[in-house]
Length: 528
Image (cartoon, rainbow, N blue to C red):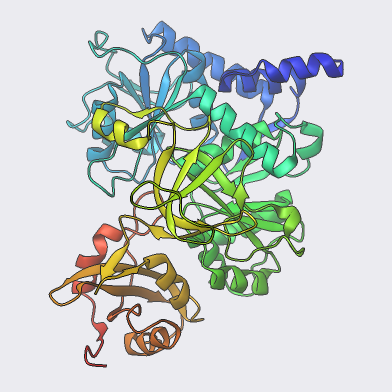
């Protein structure tokens, strides 16, 4: 194929099935997917099996614009069914395996899905649950099915460009379905490819074939989905971990020799907790961290242990990729520890005050973002959708941050998590970063408690590293030495287990109840 015809083929990619077609046509024999316990698939085989799924959906009565729920942790079969749904013109409503039947039922009812397809270990339980009102199929070709499709819903089907309905974690109420299109997803990956490789892509498989992406986040979640989709965009084979096991992850790096790894802060911490017999392959040049802010102390500890620096990637379900570090900056004057990085090409940032005006360089405000990769709306939530974007197309992220004179973005917390204590604004992320500098702190989360005098007061909950004897009192003293008196936590509580939600983030709404049962708490002396 000539360079001109290849360029035309790249320009013709408007949907994820188009991307798979491109790979299957140009790189048919290259490996696309590996996973423990599953047969590896080439790009050609991935397309063939996806078309089999699409035919089974169409034969069962699914129509373009219908929605199909997928339930599980993510396997090669999960990926096959995602593409099968898209080829049939259906949007996917993914639920990760950690979600309860109540949560899955909510996503199905709210989205108007006509079918749920569950991974084998979830099939028996979910298919017999009365809260699930649609037929349930077992994920896999020629697998079990429970019930026939009902008469098409009176709910109008989505448009053919609909790709995913991704339900948010629901920290502000019932989870909302973020409706993501194929076109916005393609544009999001183009923006990141321009930022990381100076090429909108799809990138040459020759360039990435020797360095697979280990996908250790659930494909049903935003981070895992984009990690898998971007592997295909970059022409890299992906190695899917159904469940993150740190020892096995280290083994996979030695088996497949990736050049980089992509994880959440919690996963980096789990690697740090391994004994010295576990190591990362020497091929790993850098780590990428997303899903939550990365404390600088964690990045420093990880690099000291494994010799691997970490860059950050920032995005949201509603926005896709927004900004991130550039691995080419590591070790140069452009390296900014603690920074998220610069916006990806095609993404605009604006830091604004409460009145909507832009703040000065270096001043903290709410992060607004504008790009072609944003979602258009929340499903069935007109009021929330109207609040999602401003009239000029800017998305209100809810994150607080600032941009320095050289255009690097720094985050300091969430606007809804910000505390106002005695008239001072306190950002939990800043306190968490300071407390995380203690070498015996594993996880830490700061939340606000009501206070008659101050309005709110910061309370820090933490878990300690294995083998540590760190007490709440010791950590309170540590925090007070590093934070201003008005900013330091008034109470520190040690938890045996940090509450977590299904997407791997700390369950902040559960913290007030969790600290009530803790036996080690250090209340501060208010007179000091």
